[in-house]
Amino acid sequence: MKRIEWSAMDDTTRAQLLTRPTRSLAAGVKARVEEVMADVAARGDVALRVLTEHYDGVRLEAFEVDAAERAAAVAAVGPVLRAAIDEAASRIDAFHRAGMPRAYALDTAPGVRCERVLRPISPVGLYVPAGSAPLPSTALMLAIPAQLAGCGEIVLCTPPRRDGSADPAVLVAATYAPNARIFKLGGAQAIAAMSLGTASVPRCEKLFGPGNAWVDEAKRQASERPDGPAIDMPAGPSEVLVVADARANPVFVAADLLSQAEHGPDSQVILLSDDAGLLDAVAVEVERQVAALPRAEIARKALAHSRLIRVGDIAEAIAISNDYAPEHLILSVREPERWLDDVRNAGTVFLGDWTPESLGDYCSGSNHVLPTGGAARAWSGLSVSSFMKSLTVQHATRAGLGAIGPCAVTLAEAEGLQAHARAVQLRLAAGA
Image (cartoon, rainbow, N blue to C red; front, top):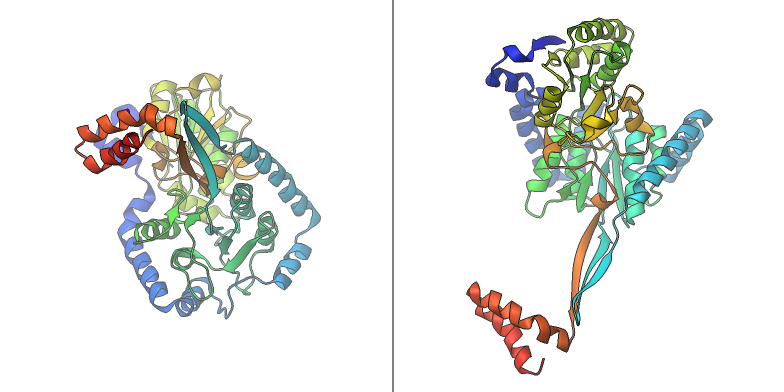
């Protein structure tokens, strides 16, 4: 990891230091995803078979997971893993159920009632990565809020393994959305299938889930097509920013950095600290710990464009974090709660030495589908409301129109919209 003295850098260099690694790949990724989207649009399932064989190394005649494969997955997942999936699911369900949006109604004037009613989005498309590492946790994070929202049609895509099967743990986690249709498709072609629809895969109204730069770009392109689907958020390569003081545990901090670096070579991890000794200790720990990781090669590639940055104080570190807007923010500082009000931009925040990011990834209850690439400046993490839309409803009685109609007439005439005004005036003249 590159060591930086923040005070010695000018603004241009600072911006370059915090640039996400995917920026350098953006043009090539964009062009290739455009080709994939066009191919699936033109050839449908034929394109999906060719692309799956090319990228996943398996030729599939049928993409949908059938009942036999689902049953085999349940039998293949051992009791310890199954218990962990169920335990995590119970907390995810509890947290998301508590935050469900609610309808409301209000009489805004005598005889005038306004309401906000909720409707689930359907069909929805869920993407569960399973490239270098299958992610049953993501299946839980997507399936549970979709089910709580009442989505009637759920399509879930996850990449096939080399033997043509879907990862059993992903299939078991997906049972928390029992009505989901599951397809063995990955990458940009899965996003294309769910956004365009093919003979096998239904077209979806909104797409959800994290992925690599290709998946993230495919979601963006899908949402920009005429009549294209909505998307949950930009959710690409993983990232974490740690703010640590002199008393932080370097062993813990290094482990947190590596927990995200091992996701993929395009992940980014950053440490900000006002203590040079802490930075030195973390650098040593990162090297010690990465050597023992099964995914050490992947983690080292991510570390090559990651940073250890010395700042003037913790307040400056929080300011830098707000500009960067990380997917994950860890405050490894004393009294972390006192700094929380200063945090403006982050997908999710972990407070204190005993709250590793891994808890949020798996089983604390909050959602790990989060905005990346700086999108946390304006986007929120996934929730039940992400799977719903709201409709407003209004009902005026004759007396209610009489009470507020003149207000509408005045505003319509001020805007020069006479037909608007007349729609009210005619009713007022009729005896409202």
